[in-house]
Length: 135
Image (cartoon, rainbow, N blue to C red; front, side, top):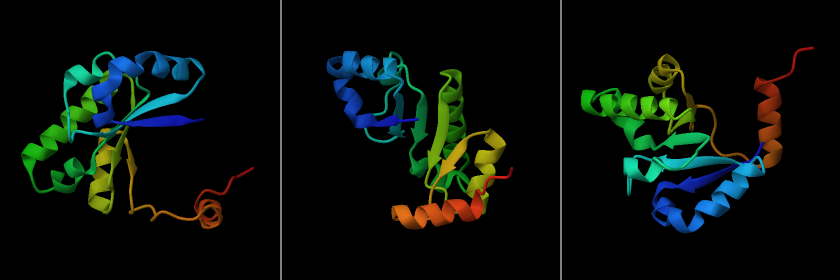
């Protein structure tokens, strides 16, 4: 139930951290590559990493509705994540139109469309309001 997010730029030091990352995975801790698509993006950086989740940076989602080229890049990165059997999460969801793109692609979204960051107590209230259990 615990996932460790590793920023894409930290992957520059992957070789030094490789054994530690594998040990964490063996303990059942998930590995998420965060902010994928900005900074030091390179397919060679993710080819050797067994990741559980690929989080795509919000810059791709922000322009995807207006720019076909950006939309094509977003679709391609989503496909790469799925081919690598990773849960794909796109950051920065702020509009219903953006969410619709993600639903059509069968991926998860994260962003202010759902809620701003909340203190623990407020999160619990928010969660119970929208995700009450049915018995």
